[in-house]
Amino acid sequence: MRTHYCADVNETHIDQTVTVSGWVASRRDHGGLIFIDLRDKDQVVQIVCDPADNAEAHKLAEGIRDQFVLIVTGKVRARGEGLENPKLKTGKIEIVASKLIIENKSLPMPFELGDEKVNEEIRLKYRYLELRTQKSYDIFKLRSKATIATRNILDELGFLEVETPIITKSTPEGARDYLVPSRVHGGEFYALPQSPQLFKQLLMVGGFDRYFQIAKCFRDEDLRADRQPEFTQIDVEMSFCDQEDVIEVAEKLINNIFTKCGFEIPAKFNRMSYMDAMEKYGSDKPDMRYDLKMVDVIDIFERCDNEIFSNIAKEPKKNRIKALKVPKGDEIFSKREMKKFEDYVRKFGASGLGYFQMKEDGLKGPLTKFFNQEDIQAIIERCELEVGDVVFFGAGNKKLVWDYMGRFRIFLAEHEKLDLIDKTKFEFLWVMDFPMFEVEDGKTKAMHHAFTMPELDEDGKIAYDDIEDLKSVAYDIVLNGTELGGGSIRIHKEDLQKEIFTLMGISDEEAQEKFGFLLDAFKFGAPPHGGFALGLDRLIMLMTGASSIREVIAFPKTQKAQCILTQAPSPVEPEQLNELSLRVRKPVTE
Image 1: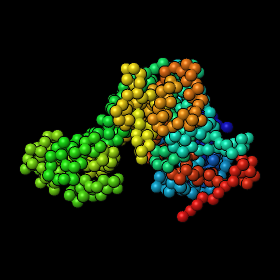
Image 2 (image 1 turned 30 degrees about the vertical axis):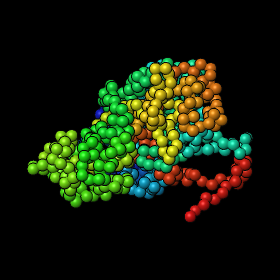
Image 3 (image 1 turned 90 degrees about the horizontal axis):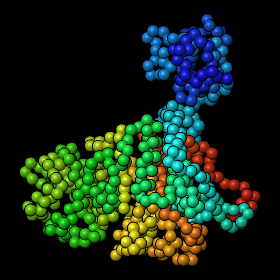
Image 4 (image 1 turned 45 degrees about the vertical axis):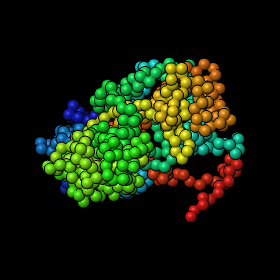
């Protein structure tokens, strides 16, 4: 049907007859000569329809419109002097049509292809048209390279690709499960996997030693720009390993992916403890492309004459007072703008946002009156202030302060007057030493998941004074402020796993009902093991600079978890519900 892709036709084919095929990207009638830009999967070539060369082809070309599907045969010739197009790979040649077949016609486009200002709902409704653009093709070409690079390097490192079940048991400890009703077992349900976590651990018990999978996962959770209800992760598990072994494999994998996709990154990534990340950046996934760093000033504020701040400072275990310096910020931002910054942090629960300005004659600001000269000097030195700087500070419960000051750090970095983010950089960071648990509303939850190995004392026992201080052997990989993935060393002994369940308020009966198959497996010689998972969709989003994860998934869902293209989810026939022993109750609306 064709002899060449458009991109492959070049000067070496001059005076040769070729056949190409694709879609009409544009058509121009120049008083007798008709020019067609024909695009296939990834390139455009110019077709010339000249009545002097072939009247029949020219007549057909008169009725051609954008996005018609053509098969064109013709002779390659050099473009005339001054008519070359340096923007095209094929810009030095053109094809003079001797035969033209209209394989299919097209309705007028519902939107201009490539116009990103078009409502996203329209673009998703006609997603197959948006995929026809060069940008989309380049994204999925890179995604394909990344998955091939993944398989190749993990194969070299001795990993075995194994598929785990897609319909499995519901174990609702994290996000909500997508449930699948069973026809054979009426009233009972499977769940789509949130991750292959338990099965990959069972593969280690089965002696597979090194496993990987490019796995589809499903979570029924509220969506945002970097989340989808179904997503793909690169899932890796290995036996007889420690944390360093796992990190080494992850770094080799990531380096191979980036290298094969044409990027250079460091062989080893920087590391930071969870507590350092929270104390300095207000986030467990800090963006290291810019510096802005928080400094602890709670001890200085304890001595001030403002009762609100001094009372907060008297409880340093649960509270924080953090300072965030913006170099030359006093010269960049007006007082009015700094007042608006306070409105910004209030949206995240802050009671206010204080600031000091470093002037030629010393530290100024509405709160300096509460500090003696010695403490003012201490603030200047602690924050390393120079003339023209401004330092903002937040005070209150530590988790609240971490959150709103961390968000404020990002807000400042993205502010048009600072513009601190170098979008050409890839800054990786390992965040280590996560707490094993977090306590919310009196409930103890695993920070990562219940199968993560806690730090043990020299006797192999869990030891802690405060359960929130117990650390885990867990690690996250962060890229440009986005959690790319993470992992941990796993628990591989039944008694320790039961102890963790107990600390989480899961009874022996509940543990046996939900996880009995795993606990039973641990009785048969489970090896020490650990692993990690990387979000493939997020990885491609960051590599391509896409603004949303939806751009890197061929047929994504909206933020309401709907597929506008297919109108899913949708009602089903009553007969189907009867077969599944189900009855639909209409949702209650207020």
